[in-house]
Image 1 (cartoon, rainbow, N blue to C red):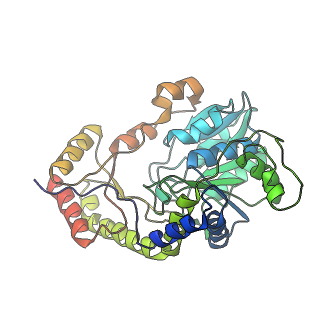
Image 2: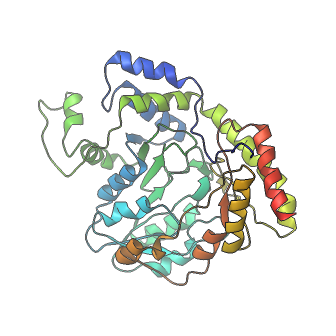
Image 3: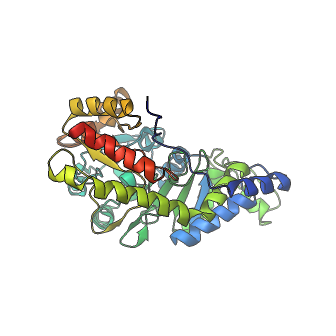
Length: 378
């Protein structure tokens, strides 16, 4: 049997060890130590965002964003059904109702043309999800949000180093959430960042992140003692996680170059299969600069995908599908509703196959993946 090509291997460059050892020698392992601060500054500079708060997971960054938007019981939040459960959970936790909308079949992002009709007097927030690191049409979304007095929270979990018209994903709406889970381009194992531009949100964001206390002010010497002042939780990651991430940030260009080479290899190799009608390749709109987070293809239907995934596994290639639409789940039906017609969400989700793509996959494995895909269709 062929040795298996993994779907994902977390990125590791070798530089991470040095910084983890430095963190251990510092004897400062809890949150908001030197490496946490370094990572925040790196993001603020690299992404041109005023504030970047490192958190323990993208789930927690989304939870923080939900608190900061003021979402409450009975409010409505619009988002695509084709997303991870955390996108919805963060707002459900605050008592909101989720309004799921259909997606565009080209990018798998929410269809901005459907948003206005989905708005009701209870709508408070729109959550665009930048699927596969490919930007939603943010101009259209922000224009609509401004007209209706709504806030925008970007789920940019897959979007680090990707851009919309030159602006980093996660920095365009009111709040943005990145992920550094081990499946992402850069990782700290588990972790995330909350991004925002508005200065007026800074103080409350610090309080929410510090368990509801004003401890950040105390550490800066602005007050002589800290106390419980608002709702909050413990969203600070360990310094060891931050040190690992700092090593990744230092090698960001190298990691991204390698991933892009794999993405480009697949995209060029599968052009002929798309022309023959066997598959559909990803579409990158002119306004988007993607980050090679994911390479997927779409096959004819669910039955074909089931056979295809089994065949690839037999050939030593671990490929996977992705989200089961949230509106079809028990919790999705309990906590939300689908607006309009499900023309594309379910159909396109059942066609999608994610191929192996990770830092260091190598040219030999790239070619093996392409060969296995072609052998199924020919």
